[in-house]
Length: 94
Length: 141
Image 1 (cartoon, rainbow over the protein chains, first blue to last red):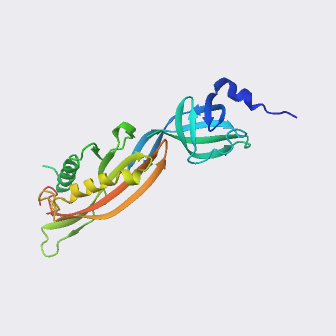
Image 2 (image 1 turned 60 degrees about the horizontal axis):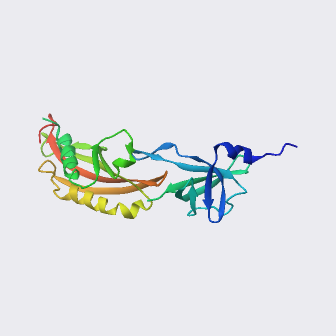
């Protein structure tokens, strides 16, 4: 049976993240997105990390995390694909 | 000369332009960058009209004007409240809009929120502008 090695996936493109005492590699994305309401529109970045589910297991809304040396607060966490990776959506500092 | 409704909208934009630190524009279909926020967009809504039956020379209009407040932050409702207050006062300071309207009054206030880096709040503060034009000429009161 094929056993996934997620470390390979994060080794090439990952950046260091620290949550509490735990450090691991995550993939960081920050594309712009367009949000709208009524007749208004705003372009805003969407900060997202992708990481192995076995890491940062208690990461949740409101958690503080440092990604590549920058501090963020977690908006929400979702599981992806087969559940072995997760996504966390982040807010930058005010 | 512009139509009376256009003169009223221009008047309101001019009044709202007096707000410090707020980007004010008319009917803007293009997205704002975060550096332009907070922002206010003034657009015309529905403008039902009816004849003045005691004097068929005139039409009464009740034009909705949307004052859309756009704010981005971690706690946008609380942080944008002063903009709401200032915008409300700017519109209601002269309920005749410099003599163009018979009355202006608020009709609704709605909010919606979108997640991005921070929370973007869109607050639709709607006013009704009641004004009268000549039945045969929307430029004439």
